[in-house]
Length: 461
Ligand SMILES: Cc1ncc(COP(=O)(O)O)c(C=O)c1O
Image (cartoon, rainbow, N blue to C red; front, top):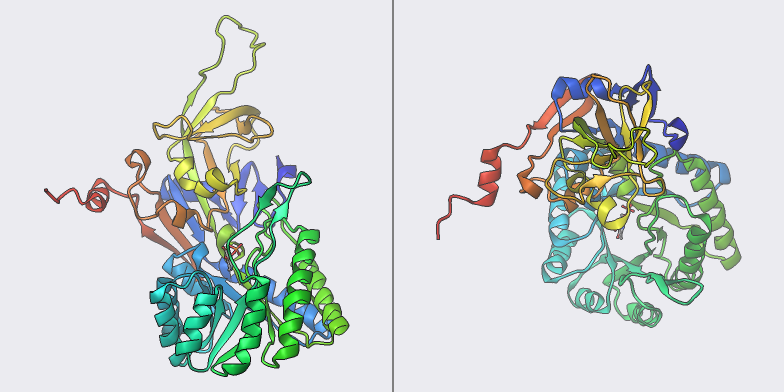
């Protein structure tokens, strides 16, 4: 089983899985299941690892720009998670009006010196808030995504730092079909218009060229293609026109494998060497590199642990005692995979699902199913048709979902009413304070009263 994954957070000792140094089975037994565990310190470790990889390559290569780590709040709106990320990152990237309200509040309260960048579609509320935040003491930059935003800000903003988000072209299959595209960013002619028009608008100070690429595993060719495109077509043009252009913002998509620990020195080295060479070819300054990390910051900080509450063999042919016909028994969990992993079911996001105890038992080719009344609430490895689970021999069996910290909560409506009224997991946060380990139960298993309130069952028509 171990060759399936190779992550430094995961260790198997005496048939039990340890994650980030903690025995998951012990935690499940102590706190009960269904259980969601947040390892808050892992957020700090991730941020520091990427920052120190970049800082050391920058020093080694004599690169003149610096590395700037922004937390993309949208990946996890847990209060503790966002504050932890803010403490260690260089700033925040926001994606909506309320995200900006929240982030500016947090920066004022906890971290006066941190940077704030805004992305996303800017509706009226968002635009007005941008003007407000820009008048405060916060070091603020607005990444412009449309001509309408530009025209509004040109009219009303004073001394506002801006960036231009460039639209990356669609990816096509060999047959000419669009396989990947998005609606974001300014088109070539719009960027040319803004770059020319800025000459007459000294209240908007252009500092940043921004693009965004998605990714999990590091796809070096795709990555370098996007870097070249954004740098050669846009950064060079903008930097030659305006001395204020100093940042190259890569958006999100920092590589993070669900299965393997990735070498971030290698990532930083590829990028820094490429940018250094491009800056020298085009005779422009070596830019600061901004990275807006959502998934990278928080994905691995959360693990869900569920117990197998029932076992069922629906497809065994009892007239075939030798079992010549293949069948997979069901291991039924005390929760819903569909609720826990919306990103996996809806978007094919990779999340590691593994048994965490009895790992020295004989393994069985089985399928996982949830306790909801839903035929689709099942899991097995698609390429195999099954998942290997320990043979049940009388001990409780636990299964973990490893790396559910990004986007799952926003997509499954955490704090809401769920499929088949299944209660949300007990929510445990583990962190260090003054060198002491703390175990905080942030919320108990959702109760019938909690759910009734959310349903507003007291309202009569
Ligand atoms: C502009 C921008 N920056 C950053 C992110 C975060 O991306 P990731 O979670 O891949 O780091 C996103 C995600 O949608 C984005 O749109």
